[in-house]
Amino acid sequence: MAVWLLQSRVSAGAFDWGLAAVTVARLRWPWLLVASIPIFGTYYGRALRWEVFLKPLKAHPSMRNLLVATMIGFTAITLFGRAGDFVRPYLIAVKEKVPVSSQIASWVLERIFDLLMASLLLAFALTRVQASSLQVGAKLAWVLTFGGKIVGTSCAAVVVSLVSLRHFAEPMRRRLVAAAGWLPGRWPVKGEKLVNALVKGVESIRSDGALLLILLYSVLEWVSIGGCYWCLAQAFSGIINITIVDVMILMGFISFGGVVQIPGMGGGTQVAAILVLTELYGTRLELAASFAMLLWIITFVAIVPVGLGLALKEGLDWRSLREMGHQEAAQ
Image (tube, rainbow, N blue to C red; front, side):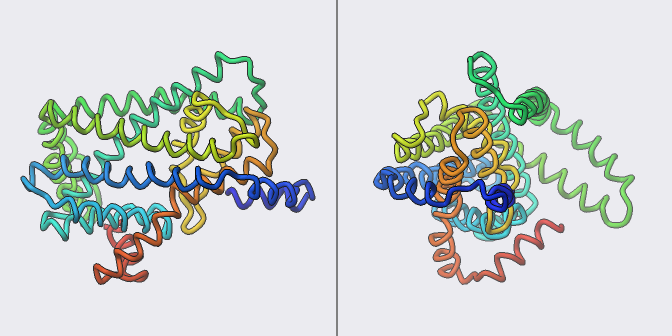
């Protein structure tokens, strides 16, 4: 999508490649290196959070296994798109000798908590933008309206999910298993297996201490991501001038744009960054595109060499990772 957006402007002769080159040349490059530190820290944070998810099944999971699987898993997402999401739970299940379905359930829980953090960020962004005197273009006005609906729906869904999973897990299990019985073929068996695994997985959030720990790790993870964005903003200082509040607004919109991930190309992250910078802050497309592409490289691509190296060390290769992701996604 980002490529299409740029291509449309290039075809119209409206993209100044010289300005883009000058922008890159003027960057404060040490800040780009600093920006990678908090991003790599998020992988360790995710491994710590997954350790809490694993506690009901395994009292002492290996942090090394969780960290390696996390780095390889995010490499798979960059290379293969959202199908790569299933590489991480599969590797953790194999390494920790627990059912794969239980780790798919942990992945669902992780998505719920990430959605909660992203919803709160987007809510903050919408509040700040609508209360400001910034001129909002037609495209971004539509995004604001649509984003408001997303925030309300997603926050309600997250709260309902957490309350239901914590206090009504068994009644929910019976209802979902009964509903799965209406599915054709082998789907009822698969559905029951997944529901049972999900109920087993939510044992990690029934303890108040565990739930608070998961929330703490989730907050720290997003603070680390914010640190990366801030460092990137410092690299563009004098070219694109945005404050810490602007960084949070940018994160709010990008957190939802990142849901779309095209294999090897990214997608929603770049589009959201370009749209917000050009429509909200009046940044030229060439500058916004440079910012968006470097953001994608730091937050997605930087882990790829490390992840591929770890995959090779674990006896995995490109084909096995791709097949692993598609196989788990199809099950």
